[in-house]
Each structure stands twice: as structure tokens, then as C-alpha cells.
Length: 164
Image (tube, rainbow, N blue to C red; front, side, top):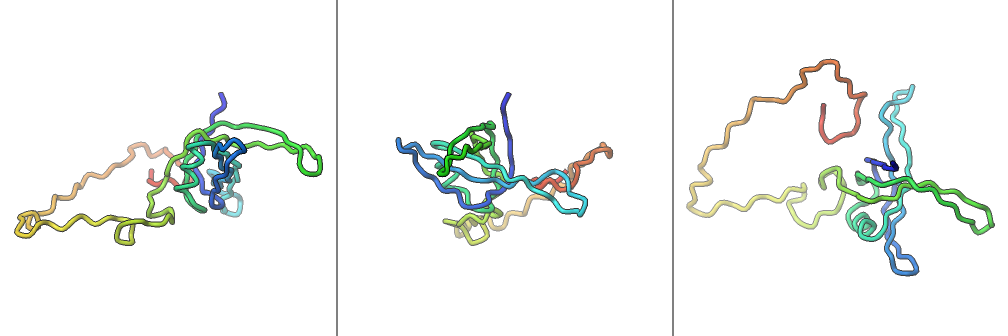
């Protein structure tokens, strides 16, 4: 089985190009943090070369920018080619089958097209003379999720959008 799942950040703006037969494709690199820190307490990253084709390439080119967090699934592919000097070059890359948003648009740095500047679209005001404005707020829940198993160790900050 050849299946890859990555979550990382784009290292530069993706650029969609077309083959000679007008098939869209996009080459890009994703910086994926390693799970553990090194001896100096620094988190290391791997820079993974990726290629997406057709609608997936267009989706990535339209909605992601440098620094955007992206989730990818695909497979590893190796290929060779001869460079301009006649040297044989080897390339290992992830062929992306699916791409998805991992963080909210608030955190991605993506441009806003509507809203109030903080990424939230405010609700419309209640109609004049409506009782909706005088309705009491719903009570807040006092139940908080917890883990009963104290032996769980997540290995540090994984950069997930939630906490364990």
C-alpha cells in the first residue's frame, strides 16, 4: 500500500501551470513539523515536494497561499529525468489526490472578501419591535471534557487545532 497523509504549511504561493495538452498541475513544497523536538528544544521540519493535478491543482492554487496550513492525502512517486547538462536526476514526490483546509480562514492569512475584518460575519440585527433582543442568553454548560487516563502522553505540541 502506498498512502501518504500530511499536514503542514506551504513554503511559497502555489502556482498552477498547464501541460502542453492543457492539463493543470501545481508543484509545491509542504513544511511538515516533526513530532518531537531536537536536543536543543527546537522543532525540526521536513520539506516535502508535492504535485497536484487537474481540479486538485486548481483548488490548491485558488485557496492556499504561502504559510497556509494544508492537509493532503496521496501517494509517493519516484521519477527520473535528464537535466539541461544531460545529468540524470531523481525526484521523489507526493502525488496529491486530496487537499483540505486544516485551519480556519482566520488563521490562514487568506484574504477576506466579506465580514467585519476579524473573519466573522456578524448576524443581522433583530427586526424593530422584536422580542428577540430581550430574550435571555442560554446558560453556559459547566461540563468540560476530560481524559480519565493519566498515562496518555501526546509527545508535546503537535500543532493540532485542539488540545488533548
